[in-house]
Picture 1 (cartoon, rainbow over the protein chains, first blue to last red):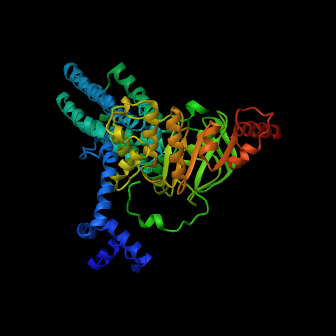
Picture 2 (cartoon, rainbow over the protein chains, first blue to last red):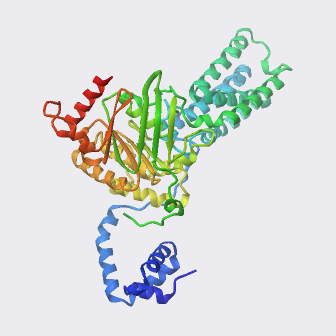
Picture 3 (tube, chains in turn blue, brown):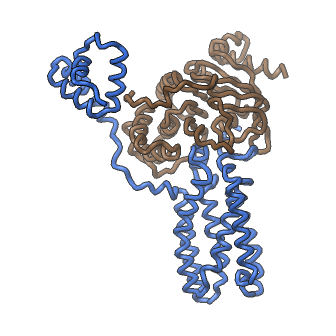
Length: 271
Length: 266
């Protein structure tokens, strides 16, 4: 619905008889309706008194508007997926993966890749939600977007960057990607689920350390067959992933606040 | 100020008496209990949160920003209890928060920084450019909007921080030491902005500068060692002091008198 031309011209001429309520409604309508604004502008041209007033307004506004530059065209919003704080870490992860692939193909030790595969996305989780690495952490945690969805989005960005490399690498080395995919999933979900209790950064580091200790030591020391080749591996890793996933669904919202007693950046100065 | 369309949500009647209401609020910072049982009711207007360093101001503000979970007691924001189970999103969309030592990505321009925060605050896409421009105008950074943050002085960075806090037109605005690093002229402009914001927003400004409170705030909340020592008007604060108390102005004398009284009473 639009305002009538008659009402607009009466409004323009400052006709008091249209009543305060109608005037208010018309102004509210004009704010949201470009068609009626255009009609108003059209009518203004035939009212010299009003157009002089409008021109003067524009003249006075011109210097103010010149000082404030309007927004430029929208750029690609990469920060929705990867924060600048994550970029160095992401480059490092890609580099380490490449190194492992090269090392694996030279020495024929596919176990290196197997060991690394779960660690890389888990560290990605840590980089995605880190108080120490991300300077905007304190600002980010207070926003509505903070929480599981944002962490998953950032983690996904890391995984998407690293996964194809790891997959290509394991094909080069001659290990099926399926061998490490399930342990990777289990470790990533576990660190997120654990993160809802003790903080994502600590959880991710803890999971990495446990993983490396549990498998690096025996594998490197005795060069046994890879633990993932064992027949028990699929149900164990699958079960662990499932449990961690359930825990994450149940506890996921806890990631939006800090538990009482967690130290933040804020206390550095005052307390 | 630039005109904008008033949404239905803004004109809807409030279903709460106070923007912020706390009863027996206890908060922990690290292993330490920083706030030990505070009762507060704060409505619209500018509230100056005063107190010596270590009084628990930052911890209290972080809890009001729903970042820190209260260890005990009740907290209601806009008449709702912040509960993770129910989701904090709705509440957080209506809160603006400037942390004390806030970090930023140095390569971002002022506009990118405020835009990114607007995105994190889940503002509708169409509203973002206009809201960002308005926020930057309000803090007086319009002519520097496309400069990188690393090229700005400390005071300007702080103003960019204030811009991100007000970009979503919050109903509760929490500013932790916003005047640190501002020169006297900027400080005066900032106080003016505060008074303007206080007309329709519940603004909580923490500071250890008594003068900020005396000139820009409509109400004073004084906390010491995690407890509420005084709540009243700046005039009450000034009236509490006598010539014998420490300080260069009536408000400062009132501040030291109230602190001393509170410490004696314990």
